Amino acid sequence: MTTRLDLSHAAQAERAPVFPPTNLAGMGFETLREILTDRGVEPKKVNMRARQLWRWVYHYGVRDFSGMTDIAKEQRADFAEWFELERPNITEALKSVDGTRKWLIEYGPNTEAETVFIPDVGRAGALCVSSQVGCTLNCTFCHTGTQKLVRNLTSAEIVRQVMIARDALDEWPTSNENRKLTNIVFMGMGEPLYNLDNVADAIDTISHNEGISFGRRRITVSTAGVAPKIRELGERTKAMLAISLHATNDDLRNELVPLNKKYPLKELFEAIRDYPDLGNSKKVTFEYVMLKGVNDSIAEAKDLMRLLKGVPAKINLIPFNPWPGSQYECSDWETIENFAEVLNRAGYSSPIRTPRGRDILAACGQLRSESVKQRASERRKEELTAKAEGDWRRK
Ligand code: SAH
Image: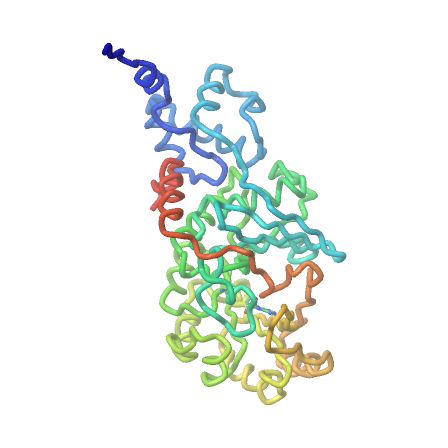
């Protein structure tokens, strides 16, 4: 029997690039510099190249390398080999009668999270981004809580939500003065303070002033009350803080937001008062979902005023948004107005938040993707891919 040596694999291996192409969309600045260095860009040119790419990706939002007109052709060809500019798959895109838009984004097999654009919020409109696929908190009135946590989103995956919205709204470049997307709120799926490293990195990228450039005061992070992480959030991100309060005493809050058993109101309010830079121009937003006969009495409105004493605060009364199988009802409109009246008299203006996007299940607490818990083997596979993408460098 003769044996022939098959060299075709060896030859292929030699030709294959040393690294797979890395996705630039969502990457942080330091990671980009590190990758350029790894690829052999001259050390003294790394910064310049990184800034060039950064501007094209995050200021102009280009989706292919041929558009990078101030970069020499050969250099562009290298970039095109080293990087991709892929956006994740959008499995569903919906538009509400009130203009609210919702995108269901696929991050991998059985891994989906939602992003919602709400027009006419803030200076022009707010994007509600997710920080996790699913949520572990199980707040009894929240639809997302009925979905098992799949995983934290990486910083790149969070940033890509903003990029997808800019693509869909046709709002590149950043200097476009008619942009409708002016504010970012971390009020989508998940608990941002359980994923603080990635949330903080994502905020660094979306606030970078040579790129997407959202001022940090236009970025709000909402938490159900992970008290020990609140100060760190302020120090690392300088973002605005929102607290999902929903009850004025521990008994009721333990029931509605079970996390309260771990960090009760006293501890939560100590952490809130300790948030950096609070004052008239930096107030904490308190979200309070109006549940019929549960937390909507005048006595509770007065308790709320006592609780907030001395905290620079805004209040958002959120009419409860029902979802299939929910055990609560929304308070009557008159009850909500009476509750708001107590707050108005104490000096809080326009505290009622109009429900948006209810018809497409895009309103607060209605978000839920069909993701199921990932098998460990699948998760490991994705982690390896993410590692190859270079996301690991920022950890
Ligand atoms: N885990 C974070 C981020 C989610 S923010 C947090 O709890 O703050 C989503 C906001 O919508 C929270 O204030 C939440 O309490 C509120 N919410 C959840 N379900 C709701 C529902 N069915 N109707 C109205 N608001 C709801």
